[in-house]
Every structure is written in structure tokens, then in C-alpha cells.
Amino acid sequence: MIELSRIDSGNASRSATRAANLAERIYGQLKRDIFDFRLLPGDRFTETEVAERMGVSRTPVREALFRLQRESYVEVLYRNGWRVRPFNFEYFEDLYDVRTILECAAVRRLCDRETMPQQLEDLKRIWLVPESARLEDMNTLSALDERFHEMLVEAAGNSEMALIHHDITEKIRIIRRLDFTKPPRVDATYVEHGMVLKAILERRPEPAQMMLKAHIEESRREVRKITLHMLHSARQDAQGRE
Image 1 (cartoon, helix red, strand yellow):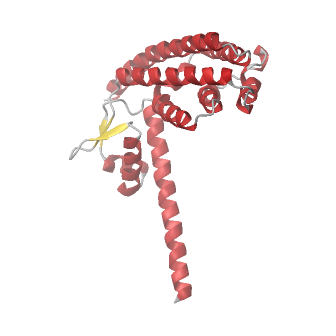
Image 2: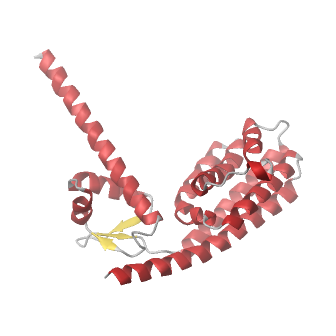
Image 3: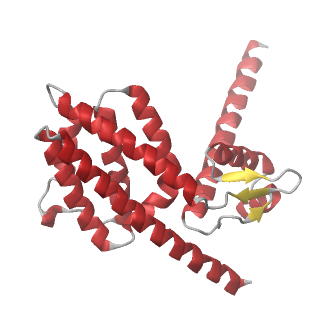
């Protein structure tokens, strides 16, 4: 009896792991569909439609959708399926404002520290490099850009500030990654990150904050412009397929 109990327990554990992995895979695919505008803001769908498209049952689909709902990517329409959350630029503008405040506060704290944390040495190795050593892969650069800003806040030493900043970073990722669809923004990011880093290392908080604000603002303008264009193009493509 004890042996059978162990076998049943092991089987249940493996089944739970497989279910969790399947829900994770569906979550990742749906998130990529939203990020790449294959699912457009305002698009409606049902759990059954997603399950049939992915060849799975509704249970892991529902789990993935509830996770996306908690992260504000989709919303449930009671008795009427689900919908990709409509684009709200005011919402993103508010998040960018909070992000700027947090990062500028982090810069001030960094400049006031007696010793510079290890994170800044790591950032120097990535961003303070010769032009010939700059990376070109857009996906890699997008991830490194995100980590640059997160590491500045983490290095400031306030864990609650870092948690709030990380949450905002997750929320704006859907549009922020578009900043790396144009090559000139790659070069500008290297230059601007380098200037901010140098000012921090020289303990010049005002110039560092000013350059950081300008860098975030330029990115915000570019992202808004690109997002509007991509949404318009994606809607035209979708209409053409109908």
C-alpha cells in the first residue's frame, strides 16, 4: 500500500509539472502574439478558439489567460470570451512618468554613495565599448537596454524601489521593445547610456538625471510613433486577410 501511494504521488507530481509547463508555453505564445501584433488590441477570442489553435485542452489555456489578465495584457468579457486589452497611451504615459521618477531618484542615490556597486562595473563592460564592439542583434539589445535601467535602480540599494520599477518594466515591455526596430536608435542608446554612466561614475547627479530624462523621453516619443504605425499596418493586414 505504501509503495502504491508513492507511485500515485509520483504520477500526480509529474502530471502537475506537465500541466504547469503546458500553461507556461501557452502563456509565452499568447504574449508573443500580443507583442508582435498578431493579436491586436481589441481583438476578441474564446478559450475554445485558442485551445483548438494550439491543440490543447481549455484548462491550461484558461490558466495562461488569467496570468495575462493579472499582467494587464487581456481582459475577460463575462459570457463573451476574452479580449486583448485596448491600447491606452495615457496608461503608458503614466507608467513612463513613474519610471522616470524612480530612475532619477536611483541616480541621485548612486552619486551619493561612498563606493560604487558592482552593477556599474558590469554596465561599463556592456555599454562603454568601442563602436566596433557594439552588438547588432535587436532582441539582445532590447533585453540589455531593459536591464541597464533595472540595474541602475537595483544598484541604488532600495529593494522596494527596485520591485516597483521591475513591475513597471514588465508593463511597458510591450511597446518599449519597439525602440529597437530602427538602427539609429541602437547607436543613440549606446551613446546615451554611456553618457549617463560616466556622469554617475563622476558623481555628477544633476547632469546624469538630465541626460537620463532626455534619453527616456526620446525613447518614449519614438515608441509612440512606431506603435501607432505598427497598429495601423497590422489592422490593414488583418483586414486584407478577411
